Image 1 (tube, rainbow, N blue to C red):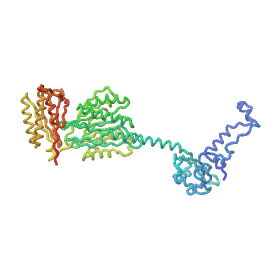
Image 2: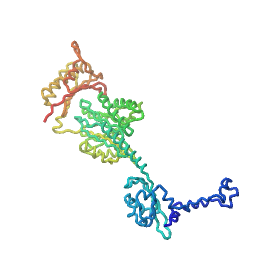
Image 3: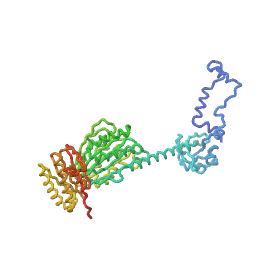
Image 4: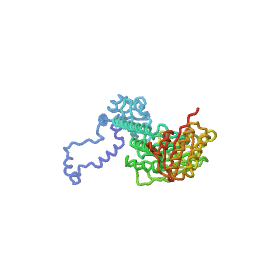
Length: 549
């Protein structure tokens, strides 16, 4: 076969030949001054003539090319030529045989349809880093070769060995997968393994990391029982990726649990977190919502540091959006956070979430929140069911490009037998010391009507008496005694207008006071105190109810 004729028809050959002809210096112009003297001296009759590309022996050139070269022609892609590198890689290939039979390696790589496409379109095509059965990786470029009068058109297959690059890329991908798995493991280990279960709320949560192409973020959530029937709920998002974001998230979550034990208002908790976030890493900022639910108030009191608004669906199906107040993200500093509130009565459902649930590149963030509101309006069932439906409605799949965290809480409306297990009773403490016997009588009557065992009845009356006496002695009006029972515990709480929090101390034998809180702490399962929003304080204690079959 005349390879010189084939090579003359390869793309670019004619253009290069024309360019050489255009720039060749003719002999009759050597002395007209248009060519430097040095160059003119080289172009003498004694200087050996350099052969043009068209005159080079093409087969010798192709045989010495380290890349794999094969030439096929006709609709069956019959082999016209394979170079020595191709033969060394895949063995001897018979000339004239169809590629489907004689070039099985191309068939296994799926390149035969590509040859058809190149032959039909007369356009070059390239496929990158295909691994052959022998374990080597090649990048294949298929270039059309024009037909002559007596020969059908063909395709020149040019393959470059990219095994080293492919292996390096695979090692990099394996390293990235390992780092991602480490970050996911760290992230999941820092999230609560089991959610705390408050008496008055039903809660479910989910966390889904981004797809394999996305680095793990710092989404997190938590549920913290504060005592006295109150529950803190928190969700946040560290603005970063990978292990570092997960580590910062873990530190913030631990700090939130510690600050929550102080039973501070939500805005004060965020104020403390703001300073801590700046100390952990000045380059890492985070958004966060911290909320507290008090069943006696029927509201969700919250503070937001640059986070997305809480959505609440009431018992009639109307969805409220808690937008205000919202401060800047944690770690920015210089901002005084404030608390807001939204109703959360019986029958209501609230949703806290991160931006991965609602943020999309092709739509505005408000559109995503509006779509989530519509989904929440129609989502009924248990918190777990609602949580799953919201994730599905947002189109979150395993290959989602961002982390997603969702926290759903419900304040169930209880009727029938369940309503008997959740009771409230309160007494305003008016007057002076004479309020103490009234409080004991009130507590005794209420606990008797709730049919508590004698031992629990007596402990409840004693705790109420000590807390009331402590408030009458050290507090200021207005004062109130509140008794509350759930299906798991009895809660005794006394509020007054003085914001000085009591502490447990050891009373000396000669002291006439200082034993009330010690007595309460001894007989109760737990006790605590907190400042109330309008000024003053609340002191409470709890008694675990005996389990019934």
